Image (cartoon, rainbow, N blue to C red; front, side, top):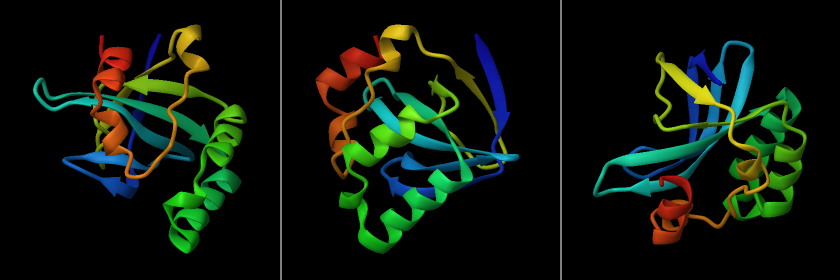
Length: 135
């Protein structure tokens, strides 16, 4: 099922030829946006969009800016994603003041969250990521 959200603002934590990792604000909702795969030859991308509470948004922002990206380890992200009220996928890069189509992933994809190692772009452009998320 596809839904849409209107993006008000994006807090960019990592950027490489577009958003790689950040917090997307859409009305009263916040989402953790994470690039899962990027095929530069075909200009295709797939993002994970995980709904965040205000508390989790503040935790992620604080860890990232005060202690650096290494503090956003898999344990922190797994906990946040496990508590998320909604996990979605999108094939469109989130942009300020745009409507974004999001879809609920198949159950198999729900447990297959990305492994965080910064910079995330290094993982997103691997053949493994492209074959897993863009095929």
